[in-house]
Image (tube, rainbow over all chains, first blue to last red; front, side, top):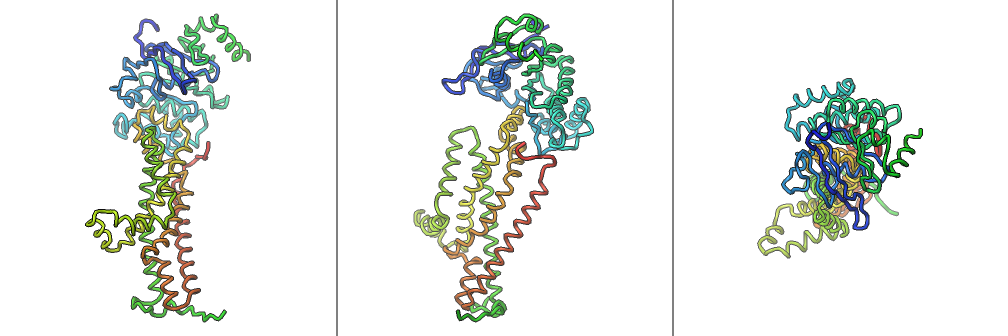
Length: 250
Length: 243
């Protein structure tokens, strides 16, 4: 499947420096096809979160090109807010807007960015809330929900924009263990429906279940970029082997 | 100490012919309130704009905002009022300077604007601190949803930042009220000036300043009470600061 579909996200030789001495991303090249689920893993500080934030231009990068649905991010003519509104993003710390009710969190960008009416936005929002199992919490504030519930709302908020792809930046890392499953379940369902997904995560169970490809990063470099089964059965690099042995040993 | 206490003085006529001494003080209070209100509006408006500017990614904007804050907070308020009132009109083209000097209630306008700009530097400092206290992910989340920078500030950043800085903003509001007394040096007949006038007319210094003290105290206590009510009214259910 991955090879037959056109690339939705294309990264070519992307490099990023925080200072002239400190390079966080080194010549990262990869792509995500339409409908493909790609898991990005690696030790902390390996640049995987930075890489995924470059994909919707939340982080600037100094060299290389990124294209999303054929649109070059670095092209001065690119309307970045418009492009970002078509890419869903889910953060480690949820980042719901605390002063807005769940419904308002879901409607804000639909109304202000997509120009939908309140009714339209509410219909869409409520349908998605129902889908993530939180319809009863619609009128609450984020602070009144558990971490797992907040992250499911965050996923619904991103989906409300009808994204062409979804980016997940360690979506379960800030959650208590018993809440991880409820979030992963939503993501698995999304993957099975054919959503294009790029997921930074340490959840190898999720990767095994739905990923098509696994990218392994270390020190800002893409060390391995392979089909899921190959990656888990015979990682080529020592670093990936060491990483897998550490996180899979329990 | 030989002092003739006379608490009835407030109901005696003042020599200005404007009524009792109490009337005299209340006339002062009206100028104090008007000056504080206009100064607070200026301080909040410019403080919010400059505070936001100092958190923008553009370097020139940050520099301009920093310059504003350093200019208005590093010069004593008294000197600033003298600058606006006595020096600036002389530096302007002759006609403009004359217009300023002959403006009706010029000490009120100069005082309110001068105090407002002085306080705006302090408000800007707090607005900036409030914005900085929010997790960086909040702005990122707004941006990732496709909101523009202006929309992210309007709908995501500022509503929370202002909630967070409400308690210190209350202090600045009280400071604004208290600082209006400095405007007596440029001839504004506000509460403190009227109190001194009462002292000079009647020699009842203790009564006069007791009254002024109580009026300032009541005014600021009421403001504190109202601000606490506001804090409660806009409190976010379930939100724990720093979480």
